[in-house]
Length: 539
Image (cartoon, rainbow, N blue to C red; front, side, top):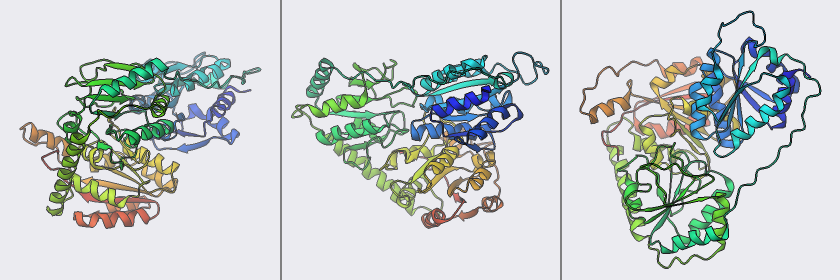
C-alpha cells in the first residue's frame, strides 16, 4: 500500500469527513489518495489562514478534530498564527504540512525550515513522519492528543519521499479505546456539599470548554433547582441558557464592569472549567471570596486565580451527583445579587435609548440591540476582534449553543470571517452574520470567492469608520493626540457585486435593521456597509 493511501485510511478510521486545504505540488500524493478514497471532502481555500480557521471552527462546533493541509516552507509559516488560535482556544485541530524529501533531495535547502521546532511551542504534539510504517501509530497519538483534556492543536509533517513509499502489511487494527474520566467520590461530594451549605450567597462561573451536552444538562438542572446565580465567560456564552432569570451577565472587561458589582456580593464561587488563557476577570479569587475549582485538571495558581479547593473530576458527573442529593440552602440569600443585576440591566437599557436618540451614526450598544432583535434564537453571529466585542459579550443574549462566536484567547484578527464561513457550511439552514471592520475586510478579500464558490448564504456587516477606531479610542483615554490612523475605503457595494454578491450602504442607523432582515433572505454573498463610531464611555 502506498504511504499516502495508508495515511488517508487512518484519517477515515478516525472519522475525518473534511479537510481544508491550499494546493501545492508537494502535497499532491496525499490529495490524490484522498480523491481515490471518495470518503473525505476537500474544501479548497484561497490561503492557509482560512483553512486553519475553518478547521478550528469545525473542531469548536463539533468536538471532533478539524484537519487543515498546506505545503512546506511559506505554506507552513502561514499557518502559525491560526494554529496558535486553535491551541489557545481549546479547539481540536490537526495541521498537515509537507516537506522536501528527507532521504535524498536534489534541491538541498531550498524552502527548508525546521517546521516542527516552529510548531512545538504552539501545539500539544508535533512530529515528522520519517517511516511510512509508523503512520498509523503517529496519527493515532496525534488524534488522541488533540481531543484529550484540554483539547488543542497537533502538527504532522509529511516528507514527499515518505508519502510515495510502499508499505508492506500496514497495521490498520489499532484499537480506538474510549477514555473514561474519574468521577467524584463520596468524600469529595460531601466536602463540596458542606462548603455550599456554609455559604450565604454562592454563585457559579462558567468558563472555557464547559460547552458540552452533559455539562449543560446537569449544570442547568442544578442552577434551576437552587435558583443559583451564574455568569459566563465571553467565549462560552450559552453553556447554560442566558434567558434564565439566574443569568447575571458576562464580564466584558477585566475589571470595573457592571457585573463585577454583583460578583462582589458572592461569598463562594464555583468555577467550572476555568482556564487562565481566556482573558479573566480580576474578581475570581479576590476580595477574600472562596473559589472552588471544578475541572478535568488542576488549576494554574496566580494573582488572578487562586482557588480555595480543587475538585478534579468529570464535571458533568459532579453536578449530576449534586443534583441527586439534598443541599440545605436555607442559609442562602441572593436578593442583593439579583437586585444589582436588575440595576445594571436598567443602565444598559438607558444607554441603548440614548444611542437611539443620537445622530444617524451607528454606535455599539444600538448595534448589538438591533442584531439581537433581527437574528433568530438559533442564528449565528461571528465577531472579529475590536472594542465592539465588549458590548456583544455583555449585551447579546444567547439562547442556544454556539450562537455567538468570538475569540477571547489569542484575540486574533480574521477569526470572525473564517468562523462565519465554516459555521454556515455546517449549519446551512441558519442565518449566519459576521461583524467586522472596514480595514479587516480590505486586508482579507481572497476568500469572498470561497463563499460564492461554496454557494453559502452569508452576510458581512462592515463597521465603516475609515480609521483604526479602537486605537483612536485608546489614544483619547490616554490623553494622546489621534494621529496616523485614518485611511480611505473602496466602494463596498461594488466590491460585493464584483464577487457576484449584493451590497447595501447604510448611512443612517435607523435603516440597519430592515437592511439586515432583507440581506438574511437574499442568496449568496451580502455585504452591508454600515457607518459606525465608538462612544467615549465603555459602560
